[in-house]
Structure formats: C-alpha cells, structure tokens
Image (cartoon, rainbow, N blue to C red):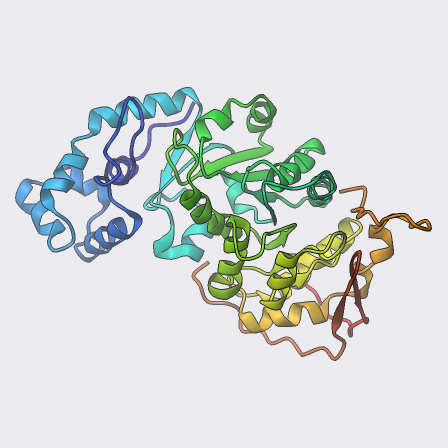
Length: 403
C-alpha cells in the first residue's frame, strides 16, 4: 500500500494533474510543464514551497501568482482536494506511488539531467530505488519481426546476467522483448510508460515481478491516461535520463518515437552514448543515426565484454552525468577489439542460404567530467554489406578503466 503523498506532492497534483477519477479538470485548465516551472521559479524567489499555496490567504496567493498565472485559475485548481482524495484512494488500490519534484525521493537522475524539464509528478509501482540504478536503455519500434524481437530479448538477458538494469518504454515490440528477456533470468527492469500505468500494474506478467522488486513501472502521466503520440515522444527523454548507455535496435528513418528520441539525445540532450545495432538486417534509420553520431553496437558476447562497454562509458563521463559530444565521438575509437566478434553474432552460412542475425545466447547537475582521453589512432570501421553489417576494430592501446 502506498503512503499518502507529501503536502508538496498534493499541491503539485492539484495544479498539474488531470486526476482522472470520475472526470477531472479540462485539459486546458491544469498547468502545463512550462507554466508550473514558471510558478516554481516564483515560489523559489519568495522562499516558498508548493505546499504553502494551500495555506496562503487570498492576498498572498495573488501576490505569488502575479504576473505568472491567473489567480482565479489557481484557486479553482487548488479547490480540487476532494477529487484528489478520490484519486489517491484509487491509486492506493493499485499500489501506485506518487513523488513530485519537491520530494527528496524524486529520482536524482531525472531531476539532475532534465532540470526544469523534469515532470512535476512521477507515478509508479514497484521499487522506486531501481530508477537510480542506471543500466542499459533498449529502444526500438513497435513493429519488429521475430528476428529483431529475439535479438532484443537476448540483449535483455545479457544485461541481466551482468547485473545491469534494463531501461525501456514498455511498448509492444522491441521494448517489451528486452524487458521480458531480462525478467526471465531474474534481472532488474525499469519500464517508463507513456500510458495506462494503472492497467500495467495488474498485468499478470508484471505483477509478481513488481512484488518481488525486479521491476518498477513509472510514468509522468496520470495512471488512467490513454495512449497519445505526444506523450510517447516526451516519455523517451526519461528513458535516456535513467540509463548509462543506450541501444537502438531499429528505427524508422525520419519518423516515429524511437527516431525522435534518439535524435534528441544525439543532437541536444547528450546524456549518454547512443549505440545502434550493427549486425543483421540493414536499416536506413540506423544508418542515418550513425551518420548523426550514434556508435555501432560492439556486440558483447558475455558479461565481461558488456561490462567493458559500461566501463568505457564511465571513463568518458567521470565527474558528471552528462556526456560531452567530443567524448561520444572518441568512444568508438577506444572500444576493445575483444568486444567485436561478428562471426559469433551471425549464423553459419551455407551456399544459397540467407544470413540470419543471431545475438549471444545469454543474453546530473549537468556539468560533465573534464578528464581528457587521448585520441586513439585505431578507428573502428563499419562495413555495410548486402546482407548486414560487419563491424570490426583494430585493437587500441590499453586504457586504464575504472573497476
């Protein structure tokens, strides 16, 4: 059973959440992210917290609002206390917890990386501590063939076998395949949902994992929210914010949430390295991501080689939670040759047979570190063939990686 949200959380919920239990505020009434951020700035200037709005008199409340918000609108939102109590009771029946940006329990990775773009409220079910565990983000489109689903599943198994958390979006297709791959071998998973959190918490394939602490489901949207393309797009930045490295399994060129999220990470956010699948069926979307700075996935074959990928990332991000763009360009040059073993990721070819991709059987403030990494003379080379990608690298000089 979840505890009652803090007074700050209650105030923020009344201001920003639809509270979709037997209705709720019209979409145009509650505060947008930008409006709430401006109000939060105003409160900080006045040395107040969101909870103080519940006890301020009309004159003081008006002084807080001007010139940020209309006082009458603020008053209407803060009068939704009864609706909030119904919503909290409903969420408790689903074991859904709620944290807000003003709470100490709000995930540091999100707040540090996204700062004012952090969702005012985060809903979830399961062990909230998993949201601070980092790990491997695995993303891809909803429409994937059986080979890509098995590939994603095996990546999830490999991450779990190495003790890494899998972070994904919970959508059908690549996301769920990677998540279930990790859960099947008792790994840890963070699912960042764009809709229907309430329904997901009672899903028979999730419930036991939520209770055991293997799985946490979280969402910045009301637990009763239905799917909306815009919400799915916005949710993607949370996936990257919670992870240490990311792998794009497939993406449509210039369209779709997977493409938009990866491009946003590569061009603007730059929280973590973005890797793109480098074996199997060619993809115009993945080609384009590599041209924009995504790194070819080195196809680690076991836990040690996957750990090396994470260690290499940490070597480039010491001192902060952000990845400088220059460091991202150097990462591929420093990848140990032991990670690149394309023969082990491809099925044997007989004469006239088509090639089938096979993955290994096992499966925040914003300043970045200043530690310099020498440019390696050896460069990885990605060769596109008619039937897939052959990624090879010359062995770079040995690096002293953190343990």
